[in-house]
Length: 510
Ligand SMILES: CC(=O)SCCNC(=O)CCNC(=O)[C@H](O)C(C)(C)COP(=O)(O)OP(=O)(O)OC[C@H]1O[C@@H](n2cnc3c(N)ncnc32)[C@H](O)[C@@H]1OP(=O)(O)O
Ligand SMILES: CC(C)C(=O)C(=O)O
Image (tube, rainbow, N blue to C red; front, side):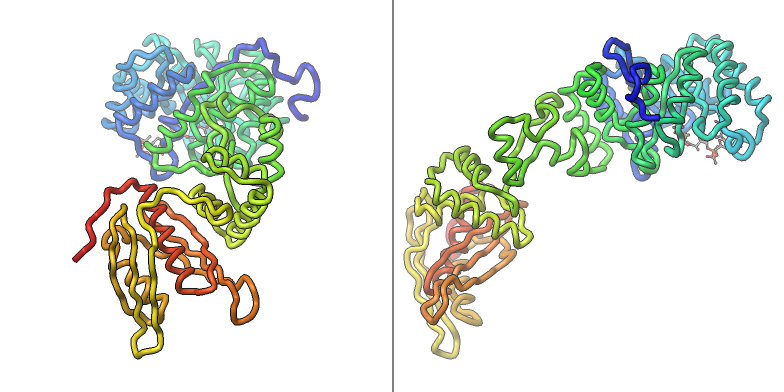
């Protein structure tokens, strides 16, 4: 049954719920991820700033390098409890002790598949062994959480026996683990509610079915007071439940605070950088698009009331709202972005600019602010200070080799050059490149011609996209002469790239 349907099954805002972060252990188990000691230290510090209660720093049994990294984290003397994963083996606990951890997670099999098929023991021996391990760890003054691995596929009566044996032996808590992310909120609720009758319970959920958060919330509703999470939902296979998602869901839906939410975005970036795993743009809380609006109706609504299309303010999680331009842009978004750039345009001009932005977006293009400004300048006829400007152009195509000569103003000085090519446009472009030298080092990503009016006197619009240093700009110019429109568009695009780069002027190559 869903977790919020009855008052008993909801999460009261006065509950104390804490978050355990296992980015440095389960997160690091994501294929291809390996964190250096320095990276673990950096992440641990930012987890501390965010206010997590427990940091599982790694698996001491993995090797000397891992133990060195865990020791670096324990050396930080954080407020958070620092722990290590241990299998149900005494030597794993000894290795964790070498790292001076505050506590251990003793991971023992819970389902018959794990008890018999993986570890090769029996239910009875597993109970006995678990109790011995807990007593051993407690004798060494460790905080102890016993995790019943594959608990969601275990016989629930046996899981209770395992929790009972652990708690009676002195474990501080028992953890319900949905190891392969196979279960749903109803079963999670039932299992955790039964375990919570016995003592403190944690929950460890995975996202294989996309139910990580749902199950974590079900576990909390059922009485779990410590939830295992990872930053950005990193972890085995489809990952663990994301720390940022649990924290914001508890805050926004249940009014229950667990973390310093405004630290979440920095934390996400730090982990993404260290692990090399990029954030999906549509990822809740921390994805690039989480607070970005492109479609006209949303942008217009958001400008009228910033809560119109957002559940909570982006600043809550350390972010800012962004308006994007593209195929779905409307007048309100264009007007707001132009205002941000100090560009004046009347209503008709804004409507025309919005149409041109949509057309550009329609061609599958991302529309940048530079694109918008180029369109606005064309539509409004407003000029601006330029680094490069076209003064004159002559092109001939009658002879054997099409040639063009060009006169440009470059930072106030005149430059003249000529070029040849396969046609007049190509010749003019070579002349431009000749005149500008290295300033023209930019790739022509696309070149597109449209006849705006019919007949032999048609006005053509030439649209070019030029790119340099990860920046690209699209400029369209309309003229009766296709060569002139092409050169104007290209010179303007280069000018905008130069302005964006703030690149010092290079002398023309002689
Ligand atoms: C659900 C989870 O996320 S569990 C945590 C997963 N984490 C890791 O695997 C940490 C990284 N792993 C490692 O560094 C290595 O696998 C080590 C050091 C743990 C073990 O390496 P190896 O000795 O080479 O063993 P290997 O990896 O081949 O097999 C795992 C062994 O652990 C045993 N094991 C697994 N779980 C448990 C457990 N809960 N309790 C006791 N033993 C266990 C397996 O039975 C197997 O033992 P066996 O070789 O006697 O059959
Ligand atoms: C070690 C345990 C908690 C685990 O990672 C899992 O069950 O997924």
